Image 1 (cartoon, rainbow, N blue to C red):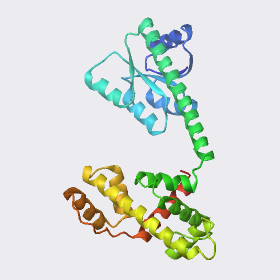
Image 2: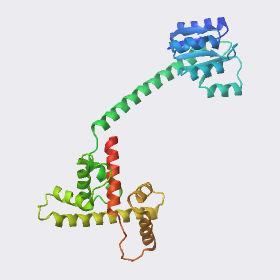
Image 3: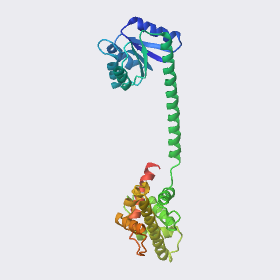
Image 4: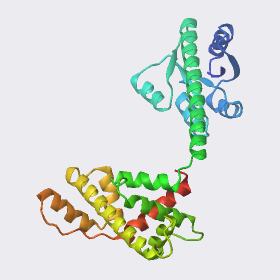
Length: 297
């Protein structure tokens, strides 16, 4: 450990230095008789610990700590004082002082406190190193394992409870088609084009593209209706459900969500189907998938 001692009493500085060196606690790399004279040397040599007297001329211990921290110093402080009161201790804690050495200086006390602070210092640095290593590993894993369009789409559809719907496969094909288009922007082409693109992806023959497109439209409509019902059901159970709060206003016309919730709450036998906006649903999904692909989720 590297220590800097600030004390206007020369005898105290000598005694502290001797305890540190003879006890094998580290090196004293600097000292000063006042806070004012200590600021520049400390900022230059950056010690691990500053042992600082509370009562000093020009700048007292608290004021010196404030100035050092304002200049970006991040080392730790140990306060030296023969005056200990609640107000002073409170001020010291607020400024980051965790330990006190009492005057008159006692060798056993100083050795014990400095040994304890050194152990804490080493532990914090070890934990920081481990945390940085883990963060680097996690970042590398995320960076090298970017989710595919299909994985992102299925994750969203799973949240809405429709991953088992046959229309979910058609939605995936549409999103993959859109993401493969160059300079597409964020606006959808006509739905007819999307249905046909999904049909072609399913290897539909030229004669059957129109028929398959119609089937795809019907499957997607059923899937979105199912999603609307699932989200509305979540809202009737818990209006603050995170999935309800997120998906209801984004993917659907909220008025339709409320109507569906009322049907569920009243256990209505009304067979009229809710109105859905396929284009809005696919538009929001496309923007979300694009955003997640860009950010590397």
